[in-house]
Image (cartoon, rainbow, N blue to C red; front, side, top):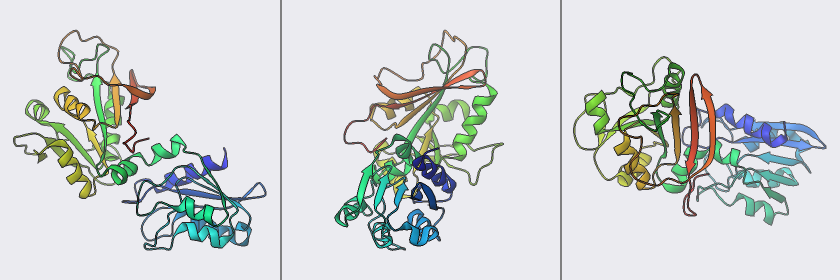
Length: 314
């Protein structure tokens, strides 16, 4: 494991605890030895870098710091991490990714002005680690993941079967719900299935907000009937960083056409349906960073719609 990979591993210890902050891990290395480690965990503790520096003590002088996110450059509850690095005498900093938050960015420039050398990795693992937070801060809306269970011929129903995907895939969906701030469907799904959208039979620190986009009523779900971009901005203002969409092809097509889907998760079952609607309508989708993972008898394909230069996604 490299020092930077250790920093990524440390950052994950804050998963589910950091609320409106990013995941951050830091490692201080002096003469080939790790002398300090830290990670951000929740609002009442210091940031990752000061924790690692405190552990390192005087050994931080002349050392290298590996950190997953650009050191913050603003006075908030704590002083800027960038100044803490300067005062500790750090000689070199390896940064995983820049901070998209305009109120906190600029730490790299502060370090360079102080004579500290900086290596910016722009590492995809660091970008993905905070993908929801980065979109929330950078674009002012939640990070949107669209999930669908489909047959080999891309259909969302299989005649004679209640479920398209298998047990393992459906359990993973509940884990995805538990990890999301909100889960949503469209009104077509509400009328046909009347879903609960809660996370069941998995460890969930809290239940996600459960939404329906469109016009109508639902006994279980919160209705969002305005334009999609406006509703997403409103949800972001209410603290929703991540949104999991589980609707049918109408909702998928609307979100993709509007450029509002950041990640696709397709659970592909080993069956040919031969009938029924496909998971998305007549809209082209160029994908990148495509991976496939076996989940029980199904195959989970994860992919990202190609982002243009104006978007803050990894």
